[in-house]
Image 1: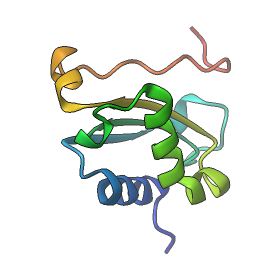
Image 2: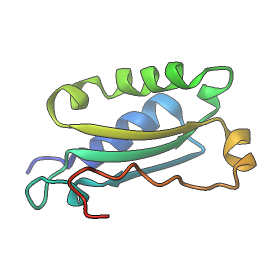
Image 3: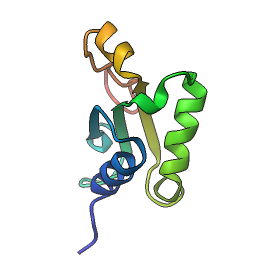
Length: 105
């Protein structure tokens, strides 16, 4: 049986970033894709690896870590990448993902 994409994302990000907090949410069901799809994800990743990096550098590291999945399985990835102090300062809050144009508002 094929390993779920979400599990691969969790495994790769955990190995690369040793996160203080990691949540991977499959948001495919709120997009115009077939039922059961794994193509649209949200990642909330808190890691000391992000200290001193700007947002673009953080996202590049995540994209690099997930390069195989981005090339072959993931269509869209929303990220919230924070250093532990930033995560605490914002109240440990997960931001809402942008609304898909195919969603009814």
